[in-house]
Structures are given as structure tokens and as C-alpha cells.
Image 1 (cartoon, rainbow, N blue to C red):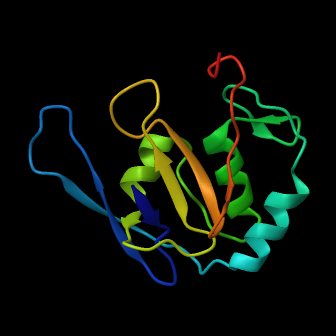
Image 2 (cartoon, rainbow, N blue to C red):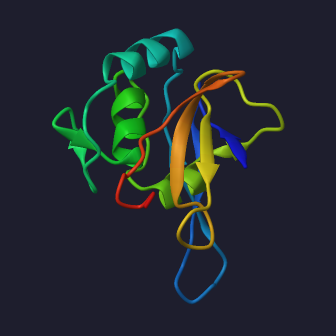
Length: 131
């Protein structure tokens, strides 16, 4: 499933409740992103190791990497893939800089990457999970 990052104006995200009552809307201010800037930052981080829960240049997991790259362009995203999924909006055709979600080890989105064009996708892989 492809989803596009919300940008340019205050948007609504839905916070879900444990007892499945009516969801409560929450306004979040998001600044515009720069796809060229996103790709430049993502390319500059090639070679940094995968670290579960990592959010720094010492090591990233997939959502930490995405959050870090978008933060470099003044776009604040939630920390986890699940929360990013809930924060973004589906699109039919991805654009450079969109977040692409994957279902891996559990139902629902559990991995994500940044779409870089027709044949390019920036994502981190956990070598242990691929065995």
C-alpha cells in the first residue's frame, strides 16, 4: 500500500481508543517537504547500520530512518511504522518522497521505506529478519 505524507497545512489525524469508541480528531501542523532534499539526505545516510529502535546516524531502524530524513526537511512524523501509517494518506500512484508500507512479520504495516522513483526505494533491512 502506498501512502503520501500529509503536508502544507494543518491536517487531522485520528487517535484510536482501546475500547473502540468514536475516534477523536487531533490537529497536527505539518510543513511542506522537499523531495529533492529528502533524496539527498537519504543518499547521504547509505552505509549506516541497521539497529532495532535506532534513530541516529549511529544506527537506524526503518521508521527511525524515515523520521530522521523527513525531520531534516522540517517535517515531523510519528516514531513507529504503525503511527506513520495512521498519520499518512493513501495515494494511487507514488511520488518521490512518499512513504511505502509493507506487511512483514505481523498483520498490518510493519516496515516502511521512502519512494525514490520508478525503480528506487530507500529502506533499511534487518539482516537477522531476512534469514
